[in-house]
Image (tube, rainbow, N blue to C red; front, side):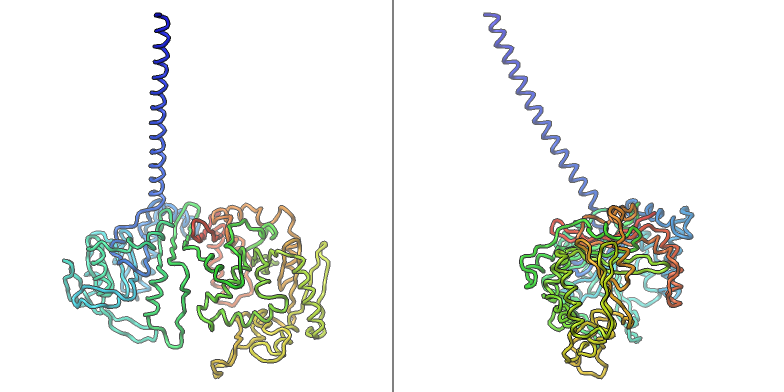
Length: 626
């Protein structure tokens, strides 16, 4: 009995211990989850810096906000020192502050005709964030008149030592108005217009704690209203989304509310002879950009809501297309290892075709997009409809290669159907010969390591197209608009005396080509290579598998820092470009190139990317150090 009781008692103890152990494990896991969540929240707060206090003075609904950080928060000052150490003349980092001050002194002195310096006059106003803001076009202010007025702009400076407004008045007489228990000092300032004439405007200044607020009187009233009522731009959903889209400390930050900016633009007077641009009604609501200084080099980042789905959905030329996903470059492995520069984009055809059909750029039926369509459409129709040709291109790239002491450029396209593209080239050859447009010149073929290179004499085609009505004429040209595609010579611009409708096909501004210009085309695998220099085509065809640009350490490091996979990318080997022998440039450009060469050689590469994710389009441009 005792033994049995002991057995039961032991079982009870074991069960109780298990229950208490399970409870302890549950509590432990709960605490761990809370800790992980807290660390994640802290990490988010650390990676996304808080807006500076001065932003509380920027009115709600502002069209644009520019934030400059001369104090370089975080480790950006150290990163700046590392960057400058590699440049000519900046070997002594111990005097970094003095060198930066001297450089800013020169800039300020030049801008003020020698009347001011940065270290002597402006440094007290650069103790923290400096903010420039453009309020909405029409604002309501409860100032002296209580009337609605137009606010033009604000500057909010973070000060040290309370310099106040007096130094900014430079001896000019000031009137004082008290608004929201704050003195606003106003002076008359002469402003030189683009015509050279001068006009007097009223500039206002107020001191709010350690901030100095400068602008027109209505804008200063708005800033004081925003602070007193707690209604700053930080309460705008668009500003909040833009700010959260960026991470890390920055040296500069720009925000634009495109809807509000359209209102500002519509209210601003336009110079004589200029047409007010129309902005697309369904474009992104906001744009954001920031400059960061990092240990790997300077970085420029942009973000905006992704508009591609809207563009494609509203297009009659890209039915069923969805926005492209980020992808690794298929063209970089096919380019020579010595490639100097590269610009590429993905899903090129469908998106460009959609933009063209919607005329997003022009916003009207008679703007630049319509002119481009008039020039390009008939010529592209020869080989197939504009929609079909563009829709068949997945990735497209413009590349720059070394060629002796000079450079050569060309296009590389990844086509969905290489056989169809080859047939179009053959069709082009047959139609050109049949129409007698070559003037005795021949389209030639050559075999290059098993690949056919077709070379077309461009000069006779331009001449024939011009003679048969290109460039706005009405003749029965077989290749209308060809001049607009290959070189502006065959599509002359209307004369100044011509009426508004004198030419419906203006030149798109490409440089004229020599009469003996020849276009070389080759197809290998899924790639179509096109260039005016046969050497470019051969260099691409000569690239060995596994030995192209994509495998080079400099390219890999740069494009990784910029962001890959992506929707579009750009790359430039700055060191190689800087070490090129002097090109045949005019004297002024040659002098500037000689000045820039040591600085180009001090860097490694420039790389950029456009990526999509979380409903945003993000851009990133980096300059890497060697």
